[in-house]
Amino acid sequence: MYQEYWQLDCKPFEPTGDARFLFPSPGHQSALHKLRYAIESRRPAALLAGAAGVGKSLLWQTLVGQLGNSVGRCAQLLFPLMSPREMLAYLAEHLGAAVPSDNRSVDGCLRGLQEVLTETQQRGELSIIIVNEAHLLEDAGLLEPLRLLMNLRGGDQPLFTLLLVGQVSALSMMQRCNYLDERLELQVLLKPFTGEETAGYIEHRLVAAGATRPLFTPQALEMAHQLTGGIPRRINRLCDLALLVGFAGKESCIDAPQLRAVNGELITLSAAA
Image (tube, rainbow, N blue to C red; front, side, top):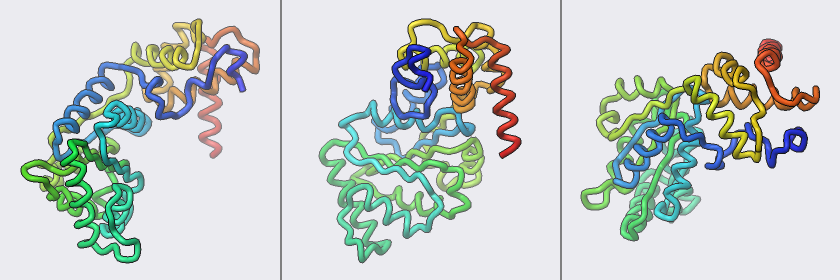
């Protein structure tokens, strides 16, 4: 709607898995390198934790994209509120295990997973199981089934890397469940952006969307951090609406008072919802 006015190729603050929009902050880059090392080294499990909206999904999507053809099998469990039997059937289906749809017993699913993951390992390819919203696993009773699933091995190596992705409470959950915590080779906490990183993030997204000049004043960039706490999802929502309001008002750029006014509209809408 506003792209042509601001001379952009696309909307810069949309939720997307496009790696062009991943801002290479030190914290995000460090997390990316650590998780990539864990997977390429065939570690049994790793945990990526962070507040809601901090950028965990984009990070693991970028990670899988970077690994490219080295990944032979990848399953994403996006809704972990299911029974252990349903989880095994879901993973068997999405990892390509040869399990008849009318006979998905626990034993049958495990045999199918063992076979397909072993074949993938023998080809020298990686297998990844990504569990999103991992902080819900304890309530769903899936922590112990996942630990048992990690007993699938090919020789002296695990057949897959389990990547748990969840909110900060997942860290304390792992401490309570030491039978799984001891399997975690790596725990990464993704933190909100600093003020400097928030400004860099906004400018990075704008350039990735085709901007050829600054659209937010330096004062607006500082204000964006104050208003959002450096949480990317909040930054996206605020800046997207600011560009829309700026377009409607035929502004040449977004300044701090305009950004504060836009934030006031978001707060009003949230309170009314």
